[in-house]
Amino acid sequence: MNRNKISSHSPFESKIGFTRAIRIGNSTTVSDTGPIATNGGTAFHNDLYNQTKICIKIMKKAIEDARSTLLSVVRTSYI
Figure 1 (cartoon, one colour):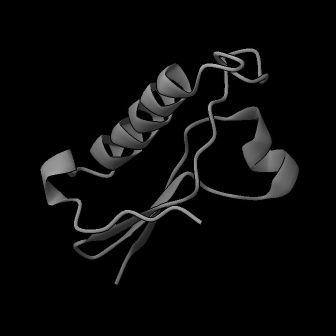
Figure 2: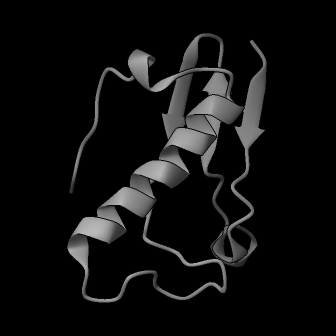
């Protein structure tokens, strides 16, 4: 099966070696996501609601870039 890496172009991808998402066959796995601002800092410092919204936005884009939709998400987790 093909393994397709989906980049979010986060400045941390190359620094710490991760890919936002990987699609193999019909499955897409999205990596942990933090509230990263476009400048690489923390977005919405001390604002958990808006940090959560930006994390979901980042994950949604990765899922869509993998040719899928939020309707196909079957599991989320928080560690």
